[in-house]
Amino acid sequence: MRSKAEDASLIRRILPPVLVFALAVFTYSQYGLSAQLGATNSINLYSGQRMAEGIPHYVSIFDVITPLGPMLAGVGVMISKQLGWSDIYTARLLFFFLGCCAVVSIYLLGNSLFRSQRVGVFAALTFLGFFGFAAEIPQGPYHKVPMILFGVLSIFFTSRRRWFLAGLCGSLSFLLWQPTVIFPLVTLFLATMQPRDIRPATTVRALLGTGLPLVAVGAYFYHYNAFYRLLEGSFLIHIFYGDRGEDGPDGFSLLSRFSEPVKAAFEGYTIMIPAILVGLLVVIYTVFSRWARHRCFRDLLVQDAFAPILLSLPALVLWSLIDFENYRDFFVFLPYAALGFGRFLDLAVRRIGRLKGTALPNGAQRVLTVGLCISLVGLALANESIGAIHTKMEDLREEFDQERQAATEIEDRFGNEAKFVSLGAPELLALQHRTNPTPYAFFVKGIDNHIHANTPGGFKGWLRELEAYDPDVIALGPKIRGSHTRELKKWLKNSNYRKEEIEGPWTLYVNNSIDE
Image 1 (cartoon, helix red, strand yellow):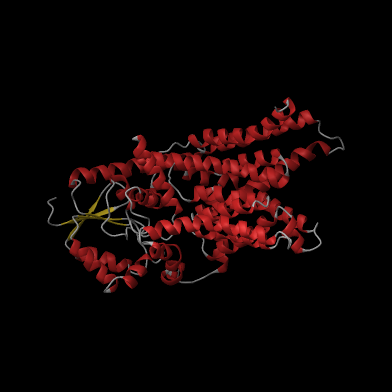
Image 2: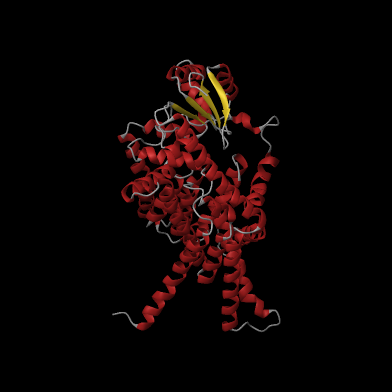
């Protein structure tokens, strides 16, 4: 039997992550689950709906991200079918749970790296205050929410030399978003840097962990004869079909690339900018200070728990200079900032009583710690009700109502049997549970170039196929961009369709054979 002291120690270890999870549930629940679906999340949801029917991602809708996000959405859809719930809200609940687990993973990493529960709690509660991340949960299912969870766990397990679990989580993160391939690569690299006597074992464990999710996902797509589609959507389209003309007339500008992440931080995390700046500076300082303790760089890699942060953070910064779109791409930097700011607050608590040479009593330190925790939670809870942020959330809820009203209006007017095509309006597909006759339901990042290269007769040939299908209604979304955008819009203008505006961000093109 365990002694009372052992029971008390167990409670002290378990209680903080449980409380952090409960606070995350309470905080994120304030945002609700009824915000705008949006294009990216509707792609995940629509693909999940089709996956529940046995149609894999890329076949149901051709996409340019790795497939685990839509597959997790598909799990949510399958759960909804068993429980008789709404597939949208069930998928959002699943991602809500994963988002709360992501906050707990921040605690685990902070506690492990700094050997301090206080740093872990400060870091997790700081992360709760990042509005840009929190706002994506009610808009889900958004793939970068679980990406944070698995990315942080990969760093956590790598720092603790748990090679199999580190590789596993890093691989799952990569299957959610391509740039996070750095996490399994860091794990594999550090595993091969271990002392010679254990190097074969550590390398094998890291390889097995990294390979297991890749093999499982590859086998799934191979089973459905869609393995090449997986390669096309995840990798090949970015290499061979990416539309680099979107950089503007001035082309690639290093200064503009550097400024994009900065602008994104101000856009998505306005009131947390001081925490982000301080946090990142503290992380950088901590890494270099620990580097100075070692005789050589190799010793740092082999012995120091901060090695995965030292290797991963610069790689992600380099990526952001090459391909950065909006504040959602900044998600990957938030755990580093939270860790650094948590450490900053911990140091403040430690040193605030030593300003005149008198140490702060332990009881007073606890009071100060509790006060800072309450302040961080209060700030996170206040996020949703602060000025422009509150207005944005209200707008997102209104836009979700508009999306559903537009879907109902189209359904009532044209019926279930109407031949419907989405060209940049995947929201309508997901809301109406329709099946698009073409997997090309939206056009970004060179998808139209992929159509041109892989359809007989090129893009015009694909338009002829669309014309032969003779849809009753074509829904055109607002974010249609690419090399062949003008060609598509010219075809719509000159074809047998009349343009109609509806509530929401889409434009309908209705076949002239259908009465007004």
